[in-house]
Image (cartoon, rainbow, N blue to C red; front, side, top):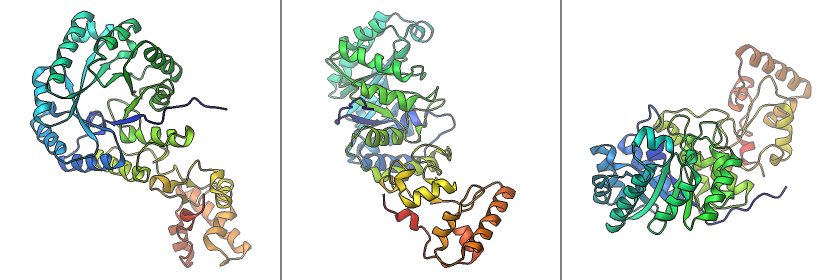
Length: 383
């Protein structure tokens, strides 16, 4: 099946340090933020988002990050307030992303203003930020529950002063099919670069982001590990690998850093990755089933979409209830007869059933006292 083409020059906007940290209970220390900013910039993010107006400490941190000479543009997420825009400029960032809600439900029940008042305020502060020499992007909160005619009017009114306009799926309410139509309609009627910002409330943030890019979006926003408000944002590692493997879109990124950054975000956020999390979960390249291990040993692409070394990871062969004799042949080579291997396999299955877990290569080799020549060999297997 031929897939939709996605442009090769799309940009990546990382909001791990801002939207990611807004996940309930997540607090990055200043040193962690500096390390993350450096790693994410080295990875190749076009833009890294921060929010200096949160606190005095965040303001100081924003100034330090702005002075680090990172390759990424540093942008300050900024409410429509003059003092917040002034603060962003004081911190030395080279761009801001202004934001306001545009859905009827937010205008009525949160902002308590009319569409016209909201648009006029937005134009006023866009002009103000632009006048300070800042690059300006704009994020429309809850845009996917707004009236489409109003969205188009809003974008066309501000497009001559903003680099990117992000109509946000703040509640993750769209399906991928809805997202495609939503972005395609905007691209057809607006002369402005459009960014995708999807939340994961129904588990569709990755699919929605890809659908938006298929429809012509020029930029995508996300966080590493998908951390963020409520159920999180679109996970960057999933999007960039889907683009690379499924769409043939190779961004200017250091893909080998992905696993390391995801592990760093996990440690700093204290939000544990699910074992079966796509791309960087511990089980993403772990194999226990005898049928699967046999296939992996013969040719890894039988059961892996890509070599884990591409993202700085490695595959694991585990031994447990579902293992087959080929797993033990791989591990022990010619050290045991088939009869002995069968006995070992039965013991492993019994232990797995009793302890309700699988065992690593190291554990099995320790148990059966073999030499370690084969340890980790599968990680170096061809692709």
